[in-house]
Image 1 (cartoon, one colour):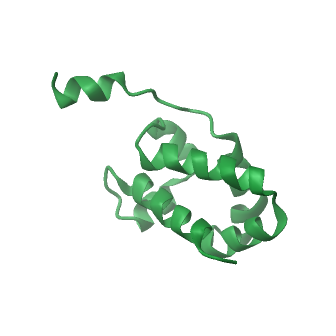
Image 2 (cartoon, helix red, strand yellow):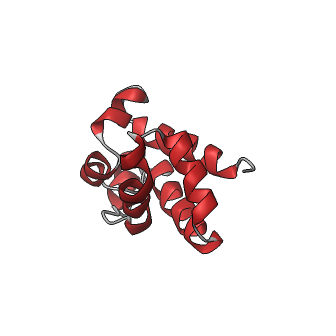
Image 3 (cartoon, rainbow, N blue to C red):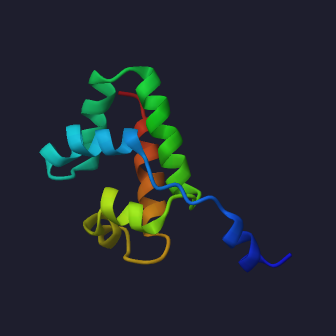
Length: 104
């Protein structure tokens, strides 16, 4: 089986409610300063919500999220900030996951 065929079988997730909540509640008000937004998110949200955010970020990291959904939800500015290449959203997700994993 070719790699190209496997890519066609990947599920394409288009709805990421916790990431949308994170952006709307934290990132937007901080001009998309993800480091500050993650700090506030950790301070104010439950561990369950943090687990859901991590799961959604892992979906982005693993390339399972539809590119149009990433364009809308994560945004072109972040895409450009992380290189403006095919894997920019994945690299952004890795960076945010690292921020989430650092102690408070």
